[in-house]
Length: 236
Ligand SMILES: CN1CCCC[C@@H]1Cn1ccc2ccc(-c3n[nH]c(N)c3C#N)cc21
Image 1 (cartoon, rainbow, N blue to C red):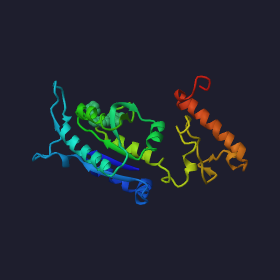
Image 2 (cartoon, helix red, strand yellow):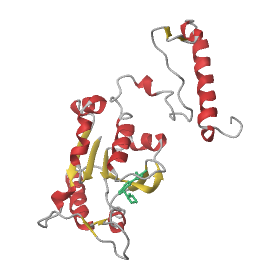
Image 3 (tube, helix red, strand yellow):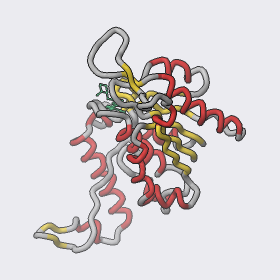
């Protein structure tokens, strides 16, 4: 999978050079490229924002630098005969980002993240590119961030780890929280007793059926307690 990120803070994504996603990049499973939006602003101050039409506080990101940056990525993809990438725009006004959407995006060949700042990106950027490529406005959650970078990072990690081959043991992706609508079961490791707290006996029983049943019951109980909204009416 190729992932392009357009941002005024490309250095923010250097963290993607480490850990699991860093190894995936080295292995060629993920091709992540961060682009500096200011490289596409050609005035002396490399200006990417301006005052909002209609007045109001704050500044809005100008459409021209976005057009030049996104055209460059699209033109390269089209020139290489690749499938048209999907544009992901992190936004508090977007559709809630979920594990199901992460799994859907992990099937695609090429994602482009447009990370806004200030009060957001001129609406005509989304309107224009909806004519050229699939566009998804996605929200990380119901709270306000200062820009799209943190959301893009979270989405890239959630999607990247689902790309085949990135996670060494695909089994570890099964029964994760939200993977099948339930929260994950509690995990334990040695020592058997820590500060007077013991590992549940069933986990040391060697009875795999009993362990599986206990873990499933723990998932349902934890989901019912913490996230009853995830359960159907007859399970809540
Ligand atoms: C604060 N400032 C004025 C109010 C509107 C937002 C703006 C800041 N801002 C600019 C671009 C941008 C993109 C995403 C997000 C964002 N916030 N919360 C989420 N779940 C997000 C996502 N995903 C915030 C952004």
